[in-house]
Each structure stands twice: as structure tokens, then as C-alpha cells.
Image (cartoon, rainbow, N blue to C red; front, top):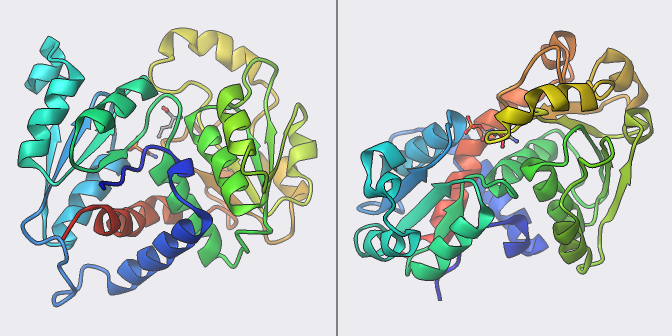
Amino acid sequence: MKRDLLRILDLSAREIHSVIAAGSAWKRRGGRRGAPRPLAGKTLAMIFQKASTRTRVSFEVGMTRLGGHALFMSPEDTQIGRGEPIRDTARVLSRYADAIMIRTFAHATAVELAQSSTVPVINGLTDDHHPCQVLADLMTARERGMDLRKMRVAFIGDGNNVANSWVEAAHVLGFALRVACPEGYEPDAAIRKEAGKTGRGDVRIVRSPAEAARRADVLYTDVWTSMGQEAEKRKRLAAFRGYCVDAALLRLAAPNAIVMHCLPAHRGEEITEEVIEGPQSAVFDEAENRLPVQMAVLERLIRH
Ligand code: CP
Ligand code: NVA
């Protein structure tokens, strides 16, 4: 049966550790000539209904390095933008491509695509989840010597798609996660409940960034206004005042703590210039790790 990666809960703890190990192996190989090409002749169709730099380029380069090919599809240039149903698109693409990646708004769209396609579907970000990002983040934490079963992660800011994927990761892997957010901006309640059924993580929502940051191994933040929420920008700027990851907050964390951000960042809003450019920032390693970790995902999901 085909496997999809729509959310972190689609993977077991063992699979996450194994994807990270495989990602590290791909990273060590780099783009070397003579490296294995397990996906020679395979094609990944990539549907982007939102903007992207990292996801688009890392998937495309990843497929090239694996010996395959990736093709970019935007709504403007395809029949998707003219209203062709997603289930029809899924059935047609399944007859050409070996896997589909989708970045879209409603998570239900990615689910419908996966249900109607006969090839694996990978979520490249929806309003509710960003699993590939968090796999790259976990790989980065591992590289920096963190124990993924025991680390303490503080997510400061909006309980958005990235935060939801962190909630799932905490429950699957068993680490401690504190999400500090204003009232009304918590990670999705249904996702928290569903992920909590695995019963392994220690996930708590707090209001105080300082409380979350104290002794944390990872301080994580993301934009306050995600793609699709532009109309709420002003309201959000006011709601998140006091939730900036700055040097004072970082001083409360563990001495070797790292700072993460999925990017793109808004310096001076959710993170200061000093922190994002400082010695504890791992943000460009996270971005780099999107490539090898997704190569590991592609290799695992696409049938040889
Ligand atoms: N972090 C991330 O997914 O970046 P892009 O929006 O540039 O793909
Ligand atoms: N939460 C952000 C992540 C961007 C990679 C968004 O959805 O816009």
C-alpha cells in the first residue's frame, strides 16, 4: 500500500529516527558525483498554492540528486486555478508522476488529494501542518547533540502549522514541549487531543514566554502572520507583543540552547536581529537540512 506523509503522526518514532539517520547520510554525501541515484527515472509533481523558497528548491534539488525529476505546478498555469477538482487532478497526476507534493491552504485539500491518488502524497505545508519542516528541525537538533527523547523545546509565538507539527513530534518522540502563546492563538485543540493519545510527550500551553524558555534546549519561533492570514496582520502584531525571541529570553534557556526558526523571518517582530544572527542560531542549518531529510522521505515513499 502507498504511504503518504501528511503530518508527523503518519510516522512512528522509529521511522522518524530512521528518516533523520538517512537524511544525515544524504547530507554527508552532498551532491557528490557517484552518489547513489535510487530514484532514477522517477518524477515528483509539486503543487504550490502558496509561495515558497525553501520547500520548492529543496524538493526540486533533492529529486535531481536522487536521480529523478521534479516539476513545479502553480494554480495560475494549470487547470487547478480554473477549478478542476483536486480529486481529478490527483487521479491524472497519479498516472504520470511517482509522487505528489502539495503546499496548500486547507489541510482537507491535501487529505483529499492523498485519498484520490494512487501515488504517495507529501505535505509541503498546509494551514494545519508542516511535517517536512519539523523533520528538518529534528535533524538539526540531533546534529547539535540533543536527545530527541529527552530535550526541552519552547515554541514561542503563534500556535500555527509549524507549532502543530511540533506538538505531534513531542508526543511521538516523547520530549517536553512548552508552547507560549497569547490566548486564542494556541496550537489546534483537535490536533493536540489526537496527538496526545500517543501519551508519550509532555506538552503544555503557557502564557509566559519566560516560563516556556526557562532551561529549554531549543527556542523556536515562527512568523506571527502566516500565509493566508494577511488580513489579520495588524491584530496579530498587537496580540503577539511581548512574544519576541530576544537576547533576554535566550539567557533563560539552557547554556547550550539553540534558536530555531523555519524562515522566512521578520526581524524585529518574532525574533531580534541579534538572536537570529547570533552564535546560538541554527536557522540556516535547519534550512539546509530540508534538502537531505526530504531526500530520505522521498526515497522511503517512492516505490523503486
Ligand atoms: N520554511 C519553509 O517552508 O520555507 P518556504 O516557505 O520558503 O518553503
Ligand atoms: N507558518 C508559516 C510558515 C512558513 C514556512 C506560514 O504558514 O506562512
